[in-house]
Length: 72
Image (cartoon, rainbow, N blue to C red):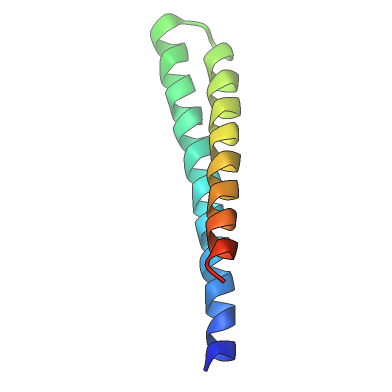
């Protein structure tokens, strides 16, 4: 029974990683676009927001993978 659940756990891990990376990058992207529109600094905050979102997503991904493997 435990062997049958292993693929589902792997799919859950991949889904969590994907949603954390994509979600944090999208939040950074849209926040950067909003700040650029507000202060008329066209690509500056878009790039900064995207990089901050990427860093946040990588940090969340590492925490999720660490938590996943510490449970076994």
